[in-house]
Length: 331
Image 1 (cartoon, helix red, strand yellow):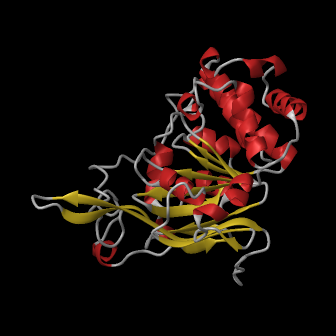
Image 2 (image 1 turned 120 degrees about the vertical axis):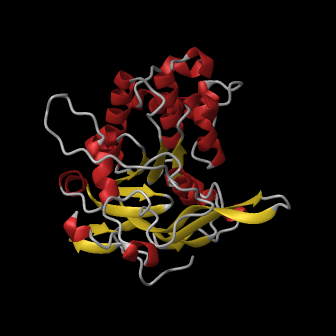
């Protein structure tokens, strides 16, 4: 076990200076370039806490989740789980980490093997980590897990195609809970579901979190959902964290122009209610050739020459509220 002196004892997960680049070939002669998917991202998650990663599609939030779960290798950076470095562990040593850190993906149907029964799917982590002995105990544990996520015990005999989308996502959550993890990465876990089913799954996750003390990394683009279930929120744009703070500070007092623009686009219950709408111009730049300085400057209404020449650091504005903007005080 590698212990890092700067690891905070209250932090279950710490991510420091995470970088992920994907090499691609481009041009007539196949010159090698890289997609800058994640650039210098740092954050922590405490036990029992929900940290939400939000941003437009392609901003790198799902890549962060996959790196955290060691589903893809890092290019640079460090990830620690309870003080143990897990970013440099070889695949053969990852089994204990898989027990403590699980993932719920966006599409529940593609996450489930259509040839396996629900009992076999949910029991897979139990067998893999040696948590049960014998078929009777395994069936009992699977039944308990299904009931915990709101499904009847006898549904374990059915196949994935016999369930609705919301029910399949409950099966995925039951499977993620089977190994008794400390943290679950929810990668757009409710975005493919109907609104009424979304509410059921969100409330289920929050109930399970309170009951089991789970930490969640909740990756989403739906700010209404994020406001409902988050403790803290990190806003990403083009591979970088633009702002990070507790939920109330982000939604009441955003300190970055991008966060302010995202919040101004959230629909209000009253369509006639007055609002200060910030409309961004242009398109998101290519992550193969990101802008110099601040990556948001090409769409930012407050951009100056300083933004083109100097990359803003993620600096603390108030207790627990950090913004990567040169002019955060003026936002």
